[in-house]
Length: 244
Image (cartoon, rainbow, N blue to C red; front, side, top):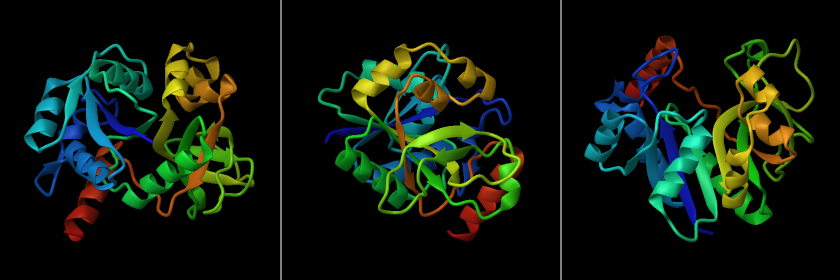
């Protein structure tokens, strides 16, 4: 199956503006993610960005990037605009990797891709086990509740995505911001209006569930830290500098 990896990115993040170009070990966060995405060997990799400085950085570091408008409501809308502009033929699957997760596990992306190819699912995503119980109440950590418990061999459906839970429900996991879409489902998804549920919770995946589009969930081997705040950046920088 022909797959395209697209990484949406923008400079105007609310909590940490300019984060794609923050440097760790001499390389920007966005270019670290591009490097990881290329290492998966599942398809061509492009960054879709609304800022020319991101495009320049990615290209200077040997990556491919395409400029998109600054009117996209979500990362998925930005991805779809990039696909239309790229005019790539025969694309069957589109992998959406977040541009602020330089510690993303390459093997987890490959696992999700294999499950999508095998099951012919409409949308697939990743989740990991929650070891720290404080995460249930942390709104910045998105949780996914699945129909069955997550096991390496299974690819169960997501029942709901939530930001806050008073306690751990059965089959609740930490959602990781990686998606794989069947191309026709992606086209359908972006044509739908944002649902009230999506707007209220600031979770675009709820638009799919609210429109009866199934999302299957694969178990990730590791949970990653995204760069949302200055504190996250310092923590990730420390880990990556230590592992150099």
